[in-house]
Image 1 (cartoon, rainbow over the protein chains, first blue to last red):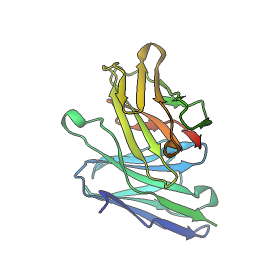
Image 2: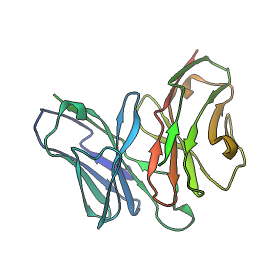
Image 3: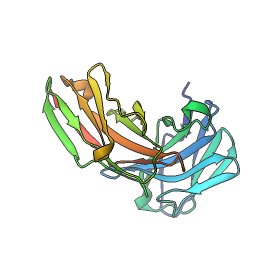
Image 4: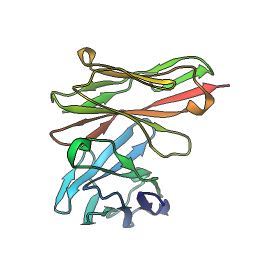
Length: 116
Length: 114
């Protein structure tokens, strides 16, 4: 089983609909991140969280919200989806402790969202 | 602010050629970390290497090598004797200790032709 799991993996929705992407991890990491990937734009940070009470906006947070329900769960919501939110979304985690703080991100397999 | 620039959008090489992917970063922080990730056609993101700002030693792992030069703010990635399986999008990323935000470049698509 994957250490970082994203659901759904694929979703097609219509403009104006609310959609939630969920991320859960079994790595025991404190830090969690949401990125979106668009062709030619790389990965852009939407939101990140260092613990349940610490939520921070990334580069492109407009139109998105997040919820850190528990250390292991970090959800991304699009309250009213629009076509330019069509993208591949990745959840990631990283360690916060010791020598590996600042270590690599561990990514989920991605959630492909299409907004019609 | 932090920034990562991967000026090469796409590179095509013939199998067995060597290829270098460029990465230039910007930060005023003195403690930071640099990364390379590979994204094969299957879409997952595969971690390749992490370097901290105090370790400028170059690293070699099989056919892969990395050249970190603080003087030019570059962290370049070379694949020696490329193979078709190296075809992927490669991302360079930067994280600073002060924020632990990870900023990615726009990626370089490498195509290795048989």
